[in-house]
Amino acid sequence: MESGNLTWAIVATALVLVMTPGVAFFYGGLVKAKSVISMMMMSFGSMGLVGVLWILVGFNMSAVSEPFGFAGDPFTDFALSAADDGTLLYATYGATFAIITVALVSGAIADRARFGPWMIFAGLFAVLVYFPVSAWVWGGGWIMNLGESLGLPAVIDYAGGTAVHINAGAAALVLALVLGKRVAFGKGFHQAHNVPLTLIGVALLWFGWFGFNAGAQAFGDMSQVGLIVINTFGATAAAIVGWMLVEKLKDGKATSVGAGSGAIAGLVAITPACANLTPGWSLVLGVLAGAICAAAVELKFTLGFDDSLDVVGIHLVGGIVGTLFLGFFATGTGLFTGGDGLGQLVVQAIAAGGVLVYSFAVAYGLGMILEKTIGFRASTDDEIAGIDTVVHGEYGYALDSK
Image 1 (cartoon, rainbow, N blue to C red):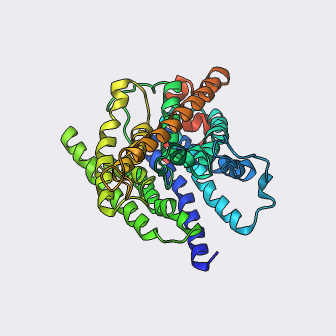
Image 2: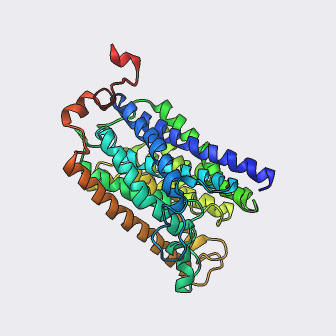
Image 3: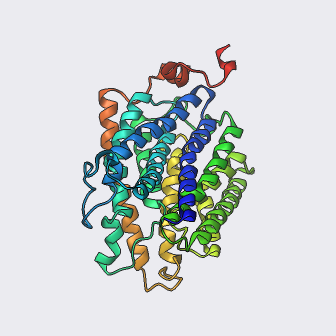
């Protein structure tokens, strides 16, 4: 591995790892003050547990030897004891993706989830869902080979529109349904308790996302790193504008939380598409993603499910928008950018739908088993008193203890 590639691989791995504390800050600022420790602990718990599981079995499971294998043998090289140095670096980079995918799910169950059941869910979801899906998308599995098997263009998911965002968003929807609504659920009842903390989280996520999208170039020829970087920047900036426009038209005011959420929506949407759009089309995608996700977060009030921090509206919807957008505008293969018919759109839709259905089904089974046996949701009294003190014995702010 050349020294430049090696340096970028290490830096990119660190950038993606810092995204999970970014999620913790983003989510932590959005919940009530009595739940900030609980919210952040679900992200840090994911860092610990999923990181260990990835080293033990996850990396082995993330590649298959035949196109329609479910996952790799988890015990091929247990705990990576025989891996060479380059493989170990690549495995570390992959671990950061697994960690953040699981951490993202937690935003749907803010203010009301018990930590122990969350950790059990996180571990099982990683092993049964994320590890196999990563093999399908990037490790030689059915999604990677779908286009060839149908005589159509290959599925495009450069950095995780399906494996990360649709996957996490579908599971988040499940847990929102399984745990039910918070006390006094409704528009305007729950406000962010610390907007600056949330915006710090947004900044860390945008910072780290350059490693998330462009990091894989370190393990190749670096020929598209400039395109990926400008697309990651441009789509995010445009999505902020798209979200704020919808907020202004809908509510009469553009908010800082909305601008931050718009940035995340743009980052989500460009994730699968960062290496396969021109910068102009990335701007279009960003505006669309920001506007569509801003509208989509209202669905929880219309449909009556309590997705506390809009994981469904931002990650599931944003992931679908970015994945399907490629069917129309992917360079050379999109319907309007040189492609031959709807082939690219067809494979993108099949991949997105397959991951969504699988993640939803397995997460539903896990969530229901946990809720019906040991209990996933905290009691109403504990929710009102504050999850932080009841579950973790800590206060988010010293003033709360006086």
